[in-house]
Image 1 (tube, one colour):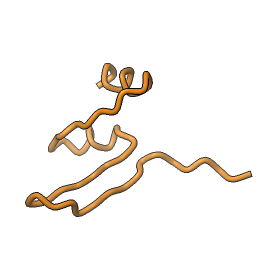
Image 2 (cartoon, helix red, strand yellow):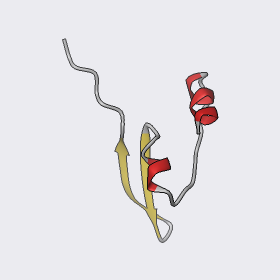
Image 3 (spheres, rainbow, N blue to C red):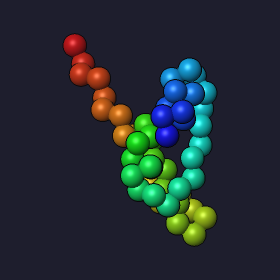
Image 4 (tube, helix red, strand yellow):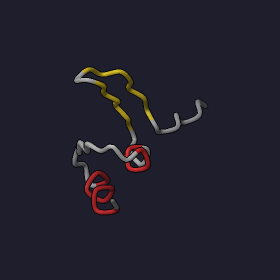
Length: 51
């Protein structure tokens, strides 16, 4: 997973398909699908506090 995070930090966009919730939660964005349809789309990155 660290290799994927390193590539993302270098600017590469990655799509990882997994059934492992822990792997999914290590991403910045989690898109959940069921039966070929998007049923969830959430940002896992905390928003920066506004000044």
